[in-house]
Amino acid sequence: LWTVPGMFAFAMNPPALGQDSFGQPVSLVLQGPDARELARMAEQLVQRAATVPGVVQPQNDLQVNKPQLEVSVDRDRASDLGISVRDVATTLQILFGGLDLSTFKLFGETYKVMVELPSERRGEERDLSRVYVRGGDGQLTPLSSVVTVKESVAPRGLPHFDRMRAATISASLAPGATLGGALASLRKLAEEILPKEQGYRLTFSGQSEEFYESGYALLFAYALAIVIVYLVLAAQFESFLHPIVVLVAVALSFTGALVALYLTGSTVNLFSQIGLILLVGLVTKNSILIVEFADQLRARGMPLEQATFEASRLRFRPILMTALSTILGILPIALGLGAGGEARAPLGIAVVGGMLFSTLFTIYVVPATYIAFARTVERSEERAAA
Image (cartoon, rainbow, N blue to C red; front, side, top):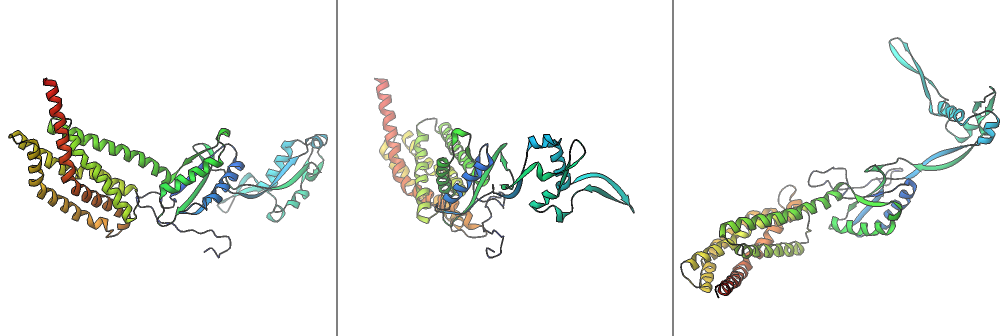
């Protein structure tokens, strides 16, 4: 398609979560008071963006390439001839822009009556020299005697964003490139170009805006999930320390998920972030099985170390069975099987990696943490009693 004169073609993948199918993932918006200055800075950013790894075919929607004629009125000469600026503007508007005067009906059809020069007499600059304007004394004066004409270019349009003049820089991503990395690099370049003290600023739109908004929302979701799990466990164990022991497995699972994503070449995207939230609920059960049974054994009079060892030994089989069933159930998603599987694969990879890592280390780390916290509580009670 690039070989066709006048055609600008590019390829892009449709988004995975139902956003605007025509929007590109990278979308930066430069805002400011002057359109020409915006266009200059946007074009400069486009040239620099082409050198950023992972950014493909950057383009700018504010193009100053529309040819136009600037007509300047010699006010002193026009005044001497009794011609006002309004007379000049009205003449140009009617003869070159057209004016609807009336309508008439013919055989049941309504037609407009328009005043306008024929198309062959209003397409070039020299056509202005053939136009006359009527002065205050009623005499016709050549328009060229009171105006000067200069060729120039203007923006094809004046796009706005948040009620400010704007230029949008959009681009696609190369295979394997991350949206977060590309946006960080482009943000740094834009901050070097934009003179913020003059009222110019940078913002994001489309999928880039959703990327940052979803990131903040998911951070809140992480915190909320951990707080809810902590409060439920605190009510279940009637203790504020035991839930901390249980949540150690969550930290281990996050580590395993990030390691699995790195080893498989996947990225921390929306799907993998959802997988991290799933891990908060999936991995806590392993710790709950150990802590709850250890509490029961200690209530029967068993020493702390022995109760912890027995709880870990007796709960090892159910922990292993539930972990394996979860991993095998999520494995088809991690392998990217089925339609759209490649997009969902990071979710499965995060869950499988987190479950494997958490299961392997929960048997060792959680009992040790449980013993450490229990001894701390015992020493605190002994000091309070003394």
